[in-house]
Image (cartoon, rainbow, N blue to C red; front, side, top):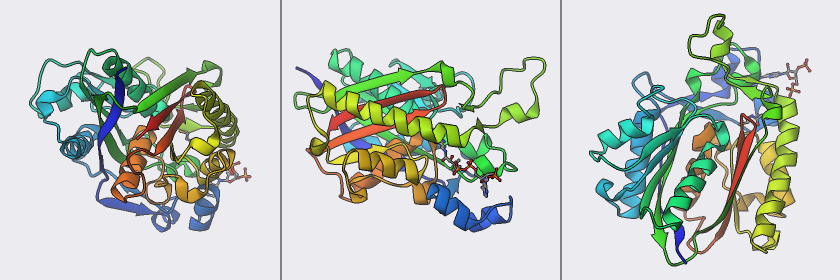
Length: 321
Ligand SMILES: CC(C)(COP(=O)(O)OP(=O)(O)OC[C@H]1O[C@@H](n2cnc3c(N)ncnc32)[C@H](O)[C@@H]1OP(=O)(O)O)[C@@H](O)C(=O)NCCC(=O)NCCS
């Protein structure tokens, strides 16, 4: 049986850092409130000449170098991003061009928001397991700083910019054991970026993320708890089998609740939230990359990845790393 393995990881964070103290000067908030309610201390903000494309390229090149794979070997490029370079060509096509390759499928997943990376991983996994391609580049890249209202204290404190990437490769040894994707449009208004393409009646505030934070918080905790049960049951495993949780980084209190659900100590959870905020679809590959680089996640460890976001859309991946 063929499996998909993560054979390389990479990440990129912009140089500019925005601290909670900086935010205190911009909106009516305090660093204490932000840390207590979210766990976030600082976040990275893209420079004017940076974009989802430039950051994706940095992360992708690092992941390919880590995997020892040349660009010409890549059989598919998927970029999960809610902040693409353009509506089209896709950021993935633009990256393909920058990498000097042509021919392989390349597309963006634009609308699965913070669940985007897990969705993209799942799609690439199907192609590799069925033998259609050998290697895939799966990236999450976001310039959230360009879609938050910097006057809205409820949202602007949460988000940051960055990109994370993995190279997936076909393998005879177990890798991705299962993926589980879901969505429920009932909750379409809980989290949205309502901008439409020049429809009459568009108003400026539609250009920014809208969120009912406390409702979303409760939904996330319930949804993710059920998702963990589903993922473990599908693999006839128990929570004791999980070595590492690699969660979407939205709020430290959600992450703590998820660690508790798995009986995992927090030092077995890949957390970047304090330093990076919520980087949407980039948060999971960035957290994975950091935990791997820091020597924490090791080959053979059992990883549970989970993401949730606007849609609502959510998903998990169980991976023997
Ligand atoms: C956003 C979030 C941090 C807010 O925390 P919360 O404890 O739910 O806070 P609430 O939204 O209930 O607001 C509580 C109070 O703090 C205020 N507040 C909101 N943002 C604030 C800020 N930055 N500084 C100070 N006060 C703030 C609110 O106005 C409200 O005041 P009120 O009680 O006078 O009305 C939290 O709900 C959250 O993280 N939700 C999930 C977000 C998420 O997962 N998003 C991404 C998914 S991809």
